[in-house]
Amino acid sequence: MLKWIGLGLLLVITAMSPAPPSVTELKSPAAAGSEAPNISVAPDGRVLMSWLEPAGPKIYALKFSVRDKQGWSAPQTITSGQNWFVSGADFPTIAFMADGTMVVDWFVATNLQREAYNTNVALSRDAGKTWSKPVLLHKDRKERQHGFVAFVPTPEGRLGAIWLDGRKLDNDGFGDMGLIYSSIGKDGSLGTEATLDGRVCECCQTAAAAVPGGMVVVYRDRTGKEIRDISIARYTNGKWSAPEPLSNDNWEIDGCPVNGPAIASNGKNVAVAWFTAPDEKARVNVMLSTDGGKTFGKPVRVDDGNTSGRLDVISLSTGGAIVSWVERGSAGSGSQVRLKQVEANGTAGASVTVSGAGLQPGSVPRIEQAGNEIVVAWTTSGDMPSVRTAVVTMP
Image 1 (cartoon, rainbow, N blue to C red):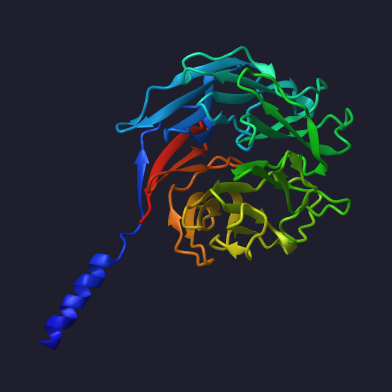
Image 2: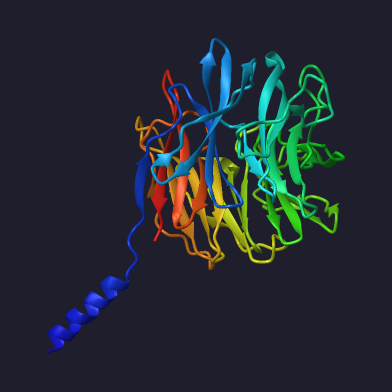
């Protein structure tokens, strides 16, 4: 009798145990030579992927696709052109206003020797069938860097935009890179520009998230002593707070690591993930907030001990988070995209390997949530790079 009772308990426990995460690769809609993927979620829950791919000699096309029951829809071209600035770390973004208006950005080079380029933006009010005439996001017209844009809905119903702006740099690239904020209206009008920080790291991604009644921005800062840790600024009651350190890693590095932070929100739940390497000890951390980014818990390390960063994050309704990052393989085996779930109490689960080896150096894999699935996009390396995608089903 006891043996049968024990077996019955075992069966019950087994039935209650969650299934392990599963990874299913999706056939990518992007052609050979594609790169710089990004993933967005529309207000109605649709998942979109945008990317760049060659369209002729020195010509690139910006395309997007919508995930459906069969996989990805047929690609649609947003725009194309010559002299675009193409980088795996500075990727175009499709963002949405509350009414579903789509906003997209892309980068046109003005002086490649100086790595100078402008950010163009266009709007669509018919789900991407047609797009408005592009305008420059920034008022500065110098041949300087204007990129690494983060979009975020504002409490006023506009779309906020935060970017790195080199208008204070000289012709040789010396000076301070600034962090600038503006906004876009439904009619395409641009708001007043504001400098959030006058001296930041030169080419690390910026990140922003909406929280109840406001916005939160995170970025890699830069002190006079070349400490490049993560800082945070908050927007409440129509005003931006002074930036303050989010992390105190004390990472001193003379050049930009091209490895910015990521932030995501789910109501008052906020998750921030970032890469750091003080004393040449690389790691990916995540911190969680339950009060809209006002305060955060302690950092939780998520990498597996040999990371190169290039991360993204999703905030869960439970108060936890899912973090993606790039983990270096053993000698000669290349790098992989990995995911890890962190519970609200800071407990980190096992890592999930999403991709095989062979990621494009410097590119940043992207993730978004769709129900209990995580959609992942990354770029493979080689003579002909290519965007690949997968779905991770979480328990």
